[in-house]
Picture (cartoon, rainbow over the protein chains, first blue to last red):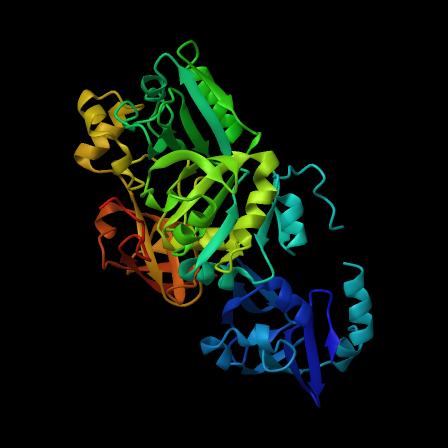
Length: 121
Length: 372
């Protein structure tokens, strides 16, 4: 699993990248009450908006940590947005992307580097 | 990086908030708790089920004294101040001379005292106090009381809880006010609040604030509640938030606050901005504050309101997710012909139109303890 400075995570299985937000981000957001996931077929570049996650208080953008085409979105978050708080780094995933360039993945932080980054915040 | 807030003011309960694990944020110039470890959703629901303690010491407290402070205050508010009986509190609008809203506030007449006790909003208090002092120069004297803290204890268990620390207080009914002691501290207590629940606002000297707050938090029914839940609770209660739903572009009639316009003073046409207000009462205003039940994503402040055909007709001034109802709700302004209950409208969130329906205010019924 790799992480961005915006607190997204991405896990790679072949050329399919699963994307979510880190446990740290979920804790900072507070109770998630609504998630807007992308439509299948949408193509995104790394750094572009991929999803929107809303707490009671505010809406926050989730950026694509890696470029690709959305092949699946987590429809269960529609009825159970609280999954993002309960299991942010597994069942709380937002979308799966078919990626074009694995080098983008390799350039992201691994968990140790991400945790070191969190210590600086 | 976390310490960019050295210029922020602190309430007398700041150390308590930090010790309780609050997440502190800048609000109206103060470093305030937006939530505690329980989180906004739990804090909100807990207040509706049991009781929550809020630090609202950032709000502006003041006394207005003079030969006839009630008559004087009527120069800047359309309320019936002169007719307020001792021991009663009332909601007031601070109006400019054009009849639009500079702030909303509470005013009280304490038994056996000539001065009126005022509570105004935190973000506007300096401007309000300067305006009131200037407008009432020579006839009344405003004395701000930054030495006083203000706590709100809200929720269905509030009466039973406060009774333990202030015997007899549970006999007070909605919008009544009394001087008493709370946990041995001299206090001004009103039965009112900003959540739609039964509850109290407790004004005490700052030096007693932490001890009294800890005493109240020592009750098993009571959790500390941050500003996040305070906002979602007041939104469900349909209570307007100054600087969002109300400002100096909004008139009392547009805001649906005609109850704050005294009948006597309408007849006498002596409210501030009487020309506009009386015209709007007679002919109707150009727009009205509406309550919307929203489907889909929360429509937040600034989201456009459109009619059924997608034509923009207004804007959301407060909006979010209702923890009690389990769906998004919003307050905004729309033309009167589209403001009737049941009207199908739309809200535009991130470029997409979502269904919204005009519903009655409040979204969640008030549960005030009124006099029998």
